Length: 181
Image (tube, rainbow, N blue to C red; front, side, top):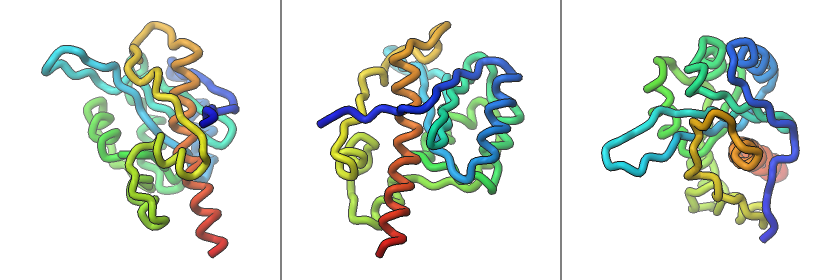
């Protein structure tokens, strides 16, 4: 299968000002794709906090370096906003981990694992759902990389952006199918 890759702009936000500018843009989007990455632990019992929050529109993905900025008030406002639909996969797990960074009450969230059932899709992984719908593969090669590295590599950035964008792409495709039935 051919590889699916996000083709839009990727911006890394690692300062309070960059986070604020990014959230200002995202708050004007009606719907965004969302995902998070945590540094893997190879030691039993050792857990890390979410290092990266990815939020994508159709053409821009922001990578929020939570290990540097923390979960700032603008990001909390985005997560709590009922005006921006946040679409992701296995959101319960993402939010459980994000709550370890700061308290917030997420609103307007749609978990694709639930949504795809309406369309007869029983698969739970982003890779499989995307493959079924588009005949393309989403690479998972960067999944176990160090998300707390001082600088994210171009491969890490593209992987992270693709995951968030793919959630939005799946949602828009299924919504379009639904409107034509």
